[in-house]
Amino acid sequence: MGQLIAITVFGLIALGFGATVFRTSSMVRSALALLGSMVAIGLMFLTLEAEFLGVLQIMMMAGEMTIMAIFMVMYMMDPGGLGQMDMSHQKRFSKAAGVVAFLAAAAMILLVDWGDTVDEVPAPDVQVHNLGLELMGRSLLIFEAAGTSILVAMIAATAVAIARRE
Amino acid sequence: MTVLIVALIVGAGLFGIGLYGALSQTNMVMIMMGVELMLGASMLNLVAYWRYLHPEAYDGQVFVLVVMTVMAVEAAVGFGIATGRFRDKGSVEMEEAVDLKG
Amino acid sequence: MSVLWSAIFLMGGAYVIAVLESWFMTSRFRWLAPVAGLGELAKEPVIPRLSDRVFYESAPLILLTVPLLGFAVLPLTPGVIVTDLATGALFLNAALAYVLVALVMAGWGSHGAYAMVAGWRFLGQFVGYGMLVVMPIAAVAMRAQSLSTTEIVRSQEALWNAVFQPMGLLVFLPATMALGFMPPIDLPVAPGELAGGVSGEYTGPRLTIFRLGRLVLVVTLATAVTVFFLGGWLGPVLPAIAWTSIKVTGVVALMLAAGRYVPRLREEQVLMWSWKFGIPVALANIFWVGVILLAV
Image (cartoon, rainbow over all chains, first blue to last red; front, side, top):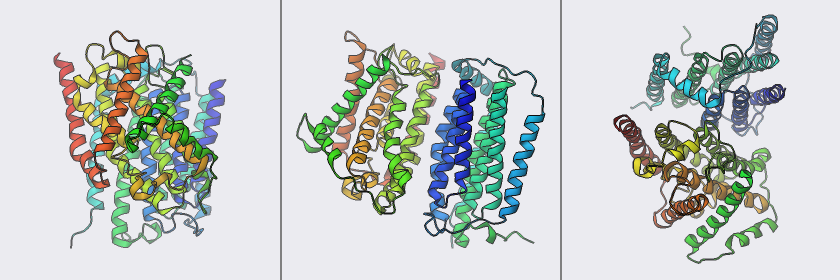
């Protein structure tokens, strides 16, 4: 019961912050609202007893979203939101697409028979141990591929962003 | 069971909001924020599935780690492109980005 | 019971650090310096025009809450720890990452040029020190075979991590100083240069909360150095809590002495040292620990 209340509260917080991202005209507020949404998702992970992933999510998003905030301030014409600029297009189509996506997913969730659910999960320390073994065993190749793709992305991003020489 | 459904509904809601944002915003950084929201929704779904359907399979958690990597990669490449475009054109408004149009 | 002891330790630590800091900064030893600082509470709070009120009000509170959360996973004696999480070391990292968020919020919300420059400066500093906090902790966790902070202290019974992996301590200590914006890496508040930086627009009770948050942050960081590298409560003869107190005070004194005698670094110097010196050393440290663990 406590779990249900917690997941509902955190879920509402996540949705509220998620909606704030596109409702405010101050760019730093927008980025930090996204951070709030991500932290609420992390708290939902903790509620779902995935302790390692929850803490990792909360840790990673702090840096990522703050960096996002500074890029917004750098590249927006009105980062403070004082001029009330409108920076959106095709609003009706987007709204329809969002609502249709949500309704389709919700219908699927409610119609599908999920079968038996599991009540017990391993303790957090066992989870961390098993996740480590999984990463270094069967999923090693996937893990390595993720690492390599980060390296490639770093090089590509630097190459794209670097100033052209005359 | 109820918790699983609530978590999935929240995921669907976040995905809808993210899709709306990614389609309606004209600024590249704002579009990326919509994409991040959608990725967050997918992570939430993965954790919920792992918890209630297959807690013995740690592939679920590995998948979440991969999605986190994708978020970081997306941010890095996106900011790289934004910086390059800002240097060339002086703005990252996507309405003006028609260079690749035939 | 643990909560009570931790709170007493935290308050005592904050008091001692405030006294030491005023001693190191003014060369005069005054027992009542922190009490005199409380006079700020009675001053009139001035709120800048056009400030972002949500950020402006919540930033000092976040700065106070975050180190408290981080402190909750640090053991003072074998029994005294608020919550012994299975992912304690990672949780400490996660909590301390929000110091960055608090300072950026304070800098942006204040609606002042100096404050904003200082807030973004701290983001630049974070890019430098972020990895240097995570990587030594990873090496420490490798030795303990656990992310639990209690296990990490137990793993040092034979030999402190400061001796086992000195390179880790070499990068971790400056990184924690950068995280707690202590001199000489105090770019976000730089009193002589940015007129107080992120805290420049704060007055009255809010400034008191900001300073208190920073003191608690320094206690948390010094305790983290003690737990991860100096063997926590371990030591002969004296009781466990005495050893923790002595080590934490020593670490704080070392940090403050560095602030007194090393000139302030510029932003690009911080980044240069972090990337060109810190990251290779931290990687070498992880390699060293791995080799020793396999070979011995």
